[in-house]
Length: 395
Ligand SMILES: Cc1cc2nc3c(=O)[nH]c(=O)nc-3n(C[C@H](O)[C@H](O)[C@H](O)COP(=O)(O)OP(=O)(O)OC[C@H]3O[C@@H](n4cnc5c(N)ncnc54)[C@H](O)[C@@H]3O)c2cc1C
Image 1 (cartoon, rainbow, N blue to C red):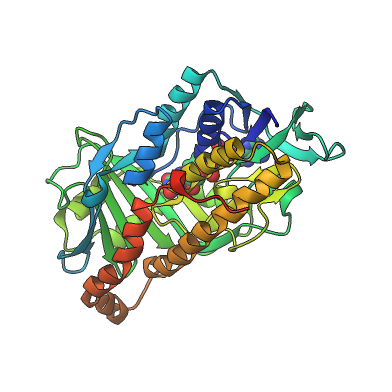
Image 2 (image 1 turned 45 degrees about the vertical axis):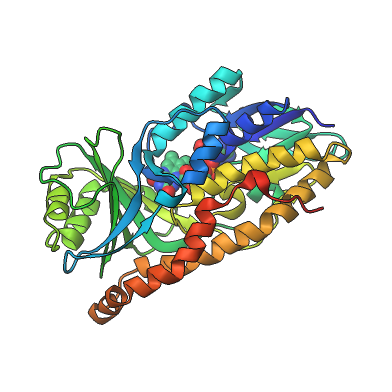
């Protein structure tokens, strides 16, 4: 059975895959494009089942415990409902940077190396039968029994090798976020809240156990820029983002939101991309995991899906000892598809509600919120109670 693995991308999917594989004795090295671990990234939500998975990988986390996501109207200030986690154990709101640090600590305890400053530019398959070669921008070529492409929505492993036709699609929506330390008035929420309005949604949440910091994440429609350079310019125009947020959220019916927006002085801005559903995940001895395989509109579950991918993959590899690497990748894909397809459908249906809407449409959504939540509850509960470690493998 194969023993050596190269992982491209040192994000959440790459590190969890490395932790899971090292638990079953497969040696891996991670190659990451950035020179150091990323210090940007907003607050991600770790659902109770994601926390259990991370615990099984010995990852110790530092964030804010969340019992439910409360939903408020920015227009009336009223609470419209909530999505409770309690029945399944609390969730955790944590800065992506903090999660990455915790994963890296666990990785270093296991002795797995991350090589920074390695940009994958090509894959070679002359020795398709036995091993595969990753080619990096610095000229180095590294061989392994198999490669995991965990390099995010703009994946080079996908575009250069596995499925070049499947390009990232801009959603017409961007996210701007910041963390406010001196937040003034006691917030209107207990742990985390989604505040819904005509001009996008605003996530407000504590992100540390002592509740000294409030995270503010605004989801808003933004026209597509012509190219990467255009996005760079748009992203670095911080004043424009600040003005836009203030225009959208200054005079809401929630005092705390108004104050948070006033006190925020800098926002990080990024455009949201997705991949179309389906697509190819593997070719020969190369498999895509996380956003590289199935980036979907943000729905608070992308991080968990990325964690589940690595854990399931290691399980398949541990179980399918009698088969070739290619066959093991097929077992993984068949087992994983139904779950990802269902999550994708749900993400797309939720995503429409964050776009700008008329006054009447916003009112209708607010009136019907309890029905919407009731309808969504069964999917929500299934999704936060699901345990990928118990998934029946399909061959
Ligand atoms: C800097 C950053 C900030 C983010 N902030 C948020 C956020 O605020 N909210 C949110 O919901 N999601 C955010 N995300 C996305 C979120 O992390 C993912 O949706 C989810 O966790 C799935 O993780 P992933 O590991 O599949 O992909 P990612 O987290 O995107 O990780 C991919 C990794 O691959 C590396 N990489 C890319 N191309 C190459 C290459 N050619 N060679 C080598 N390495 C490469 C990247 O540098 C990155 O470290 C962010 C991602 C990044 C990279």
